[in-house]
Structure formats: structure tokens, C-alpha cells
Image 1 (tube, helix red, strand yellow):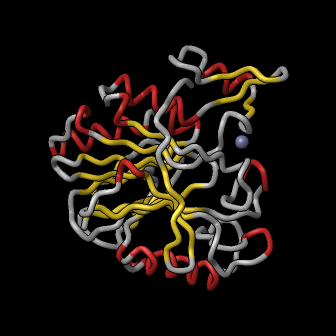
Image 2 (cartoon, helix red, strand yellow):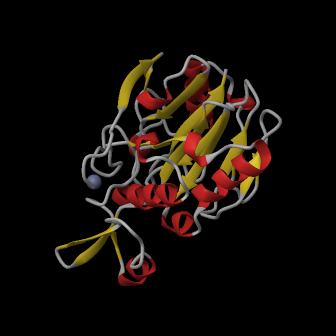
Amino acid sequence: MGALAVSESLCSCGNIIVLKSNQLDFPWLLHAFSTRQGGVSQGSYASLNLGLSTGDDAERVQCNRDRLARALGFTWEQAARGEQVHGNRVAVVTAPGAVFPSTDALVTNRVGLPLLVFFADCVPIMLVDPVLRVIATVHAGWRGTLRRVVLEALGVMRSCFGVEARHCLVHLGPSIGPCCYAVGEEVAELFASWKGEVLLRDQGSWHLDLKEANRQLLLAAGVPKENITLSSYCTSCHSKLFYSHRRDGYQTGRMAGAIMLK
Ligand SMILES: [Zn+2]
């Protein structure tokens, strides 16, 4: 992938550990990606599982959600989220606590309104226009990436708030890396015509680089190269820090990214 800017920090935050993008370190902005450390879930869900969809105990998940929100400085009930379906629908959030069906991207310019994105292997993406102070979260697996969900979010930031791509800062958070993400011929074929090193050949199988694919989309849409930063973490390689559906199967947890204008 060449010499890309990799700029992120692991931070202790209360009793949990989160990952932050150095590029998004503004006094008027809160943002963090959770890791699996510092929660109360057990067994294969240990310990800070934030997802209810994979069979973990609901009370423990709620405790974890409250713990993350408190550590970051909001309440879980304040946070908006989409019921993610690997699609490309974008919601503009205007009220706290809103839940949007079939939605993988959220946009707002409201202060004090946290946006969440859940992830395990898919790429959690945060977009910020520091000039107009508009923020977005995006959930992009291979299906969402093919459906250009990150550009749908950018489009809504432009049409609703006048955001220009050239002013946007984008951070692509921790996700499964090409090292661990072998895909079948039929998925590889869908990305065959994409620019950049999106597909890699390793020991007879194709490996997909989801972060690079989304970076290519953003570059083509006019986001400057120096404004796009990528997490260096692969969720599958780093089992102490992250859950990975690909590595662990169904009975695993979910992390979340949170972003809020202060
Ligand atoms: Zn890996």
C-alpha cells in the first residue's frame, strides 16, 4: 500500500481501552473506537461486547454499553445508531437516541449527539468536516464497499450541509486486513476492475483489502490523500484487542465507534 499515514493511539479511558485517530484530535470533537478490553462479558464474548445479535447475555451487554458511554462522556440512550444491513442507506440524525432501520451510515451537525457504528471485521469509518463541523459514521464490509456506502454518506454531507470532499478528514478504523481476509472467486471478481491494490494473491487465493478499497473510493471522490488515515490494526490478527467474526465464528462480540460534536 506504499507509505500511507498511519496515525492512531491506544488510550486508557476509565477502565476500558479505546483507539483514537490522531488526525481527529480536536477540542470540539469526541471520537473513539472501542476494543474488547474492560467489559463484563464472559467466555468467547469477553469482555466489552457491545452487540446483542450474537447470543451474549443482554444485561452484560447493557453494562458494557453504559461503561463505554460513561468513559467517553455521554449516555448510551443519547447515542444514535443504524440497524446495519451492509447496505448504503444514510440517515441524517437530528434527535438523540434515534435508531434507524436498514441504515449503515449516519450524518449530523448537531452538538451533543453521539453517532455509533458497530463492527467486528467490517471497516468503521468516521468522516469529519472541521470547517462546517459536520460528522458521519459509516459501516463498510465488502457489500457496503461495493455499494459505495462511504460516498453515499459524503453525498448526504454535501447535499444537506454543503460539505466539500476536499475539506473532509476521514479515518478508516480497525477492520480485518488483507492478511486474514481470503475471499472466493465470485467476490474477487466484483473487485477485479477496482483501482489500487484492492486484491492480493496469496497461496492460490484472493485476499481483499477493504480499507484500501474505501480509500480508493474517497480519493476518486476528491478527498485529498493526506486527509485519509488508516488504522494499522487487523481485527483478526489482534485477538487480545478485537473480536473477529472471520476468526471466531458466530459466538463473538462487536466493537463500536462513537463520534460526537462537543
Ligand atoms: Zn490479519
